Image (cartoon, rainbow, N blue to C red; front, side):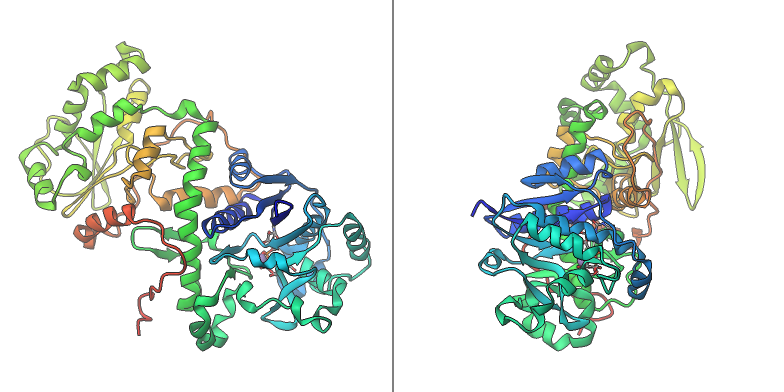
Length: 504
Ligand SMILES: O=c1ccn([C@@H]2O[C@H](COP(=O)(O)OP(=O)(O)O[C@H]3O[C@H](CO)[C@@H](O)[C@H](O)[C@H]3O)[C@@H](O)[C@H]2O)c(=O)[nH]1
Ligand SMILES: [Mn+2]
């Protein structure tokens, strides 16, 4: 048993995010097998270390490339030459049997029974069922086979699609007719973009689906996910509801199981960026102006109106709070401890500074703190973690105090503290703050676009404006949904949510 493994491959950070989802989805369904990821040398530190954490084994492999532009053009996927790297999986001889999973798959139900199958078992490709899809296959590691595959690949036109799938189908050419036991059910490799063609079957067999495979040019990590309302955005094209469900299933694993690991890893990489301590957090948490401390919207509003939620008073409260002052003193030189913050009043797209003497805020608008000078920079990094979004009746407490591991600098990942993580894990997540999930995603997307890229911890923290509050219309509801979304336990399988406009 222990000599059997699931194997995946990632040659860049984007696919590595996928690989992490593969691993965590396998763990979620209770696999008893080892998890192995093959990587090339171009991954960022953060991603590589998170992989190390999530997988039992990380194997560095050389990138192989078909360099077969002509065939890849036929496939309209010039990037897939690198998938030849996949055949390195035959080198993992310490395992007696393996199941390869593309990094763009997500496992919905236990598939350990695949190890009862023999090489080469795979599911039919939906586009040409006489070929198998090489996103999921059972094989027997063997250096001998690897050598043969390399030799085979070196023949001109060995792969009729320029990728590994053409190569493997040519090599294991008797798959189509020799042994039906080597034909895996389609439910082990459901290519999600084919649903359009046979929706009734998907409906009929939905509960049997074990592995979803996001084959094709659109990958889940290229989209943006809003965990608050479980909506996806990005280049979704004309995806069918069913596919959106699968994309959501992927994102749930990403959000609930992978993201906390990335954040934790980031903290370990950059502990110095953890500016707020546990004691800071406890002080902040006990403060009356945190939305999560308000039992009801009404109380929140009345507190707001009374005084305690006006920004000047918040600042006064914070700076007058002896324990915060002390903890800040400990961190920064005391003489610089002067709150020279300017608060900017952002209303209808305009930025108007207003001053601490200004009367209390009566309207629920969006505010943000901005640093004014270097001397207050560090102090304000504390406040920068609180981005109050006050939209209509909502008082959202944004930023890192309730989040952690923000990814907001231009250079990569910012760390949070252990306390942030605890708070985050306890469900105190604000999805509107600068560490909102979409911000995090943006950063990841930027990282992915700039592959390969290393994180530079020396980069100064950037205070970014809050995301545009396009959601303010229904913010009362959001406020409670927010809490709910944050505390909902991860649920397995696919949720039968119907995307708007497609409700039956
Ligand atoms: O830049 C890349 C590209 C791919 N991969 C890995 O290679 C796999 C295959 O690439 P993918 O983009 O998933 O291809 P598909 O869109 O699934 O396209 C099909 O065609 C590919 C090329 O023949 C096969 O590898 C796939 O299994 C098959 O489903 C990925 O999952 C990754 O594990 C990388 O690590 N880096
Ligand atoms: Mn794939």
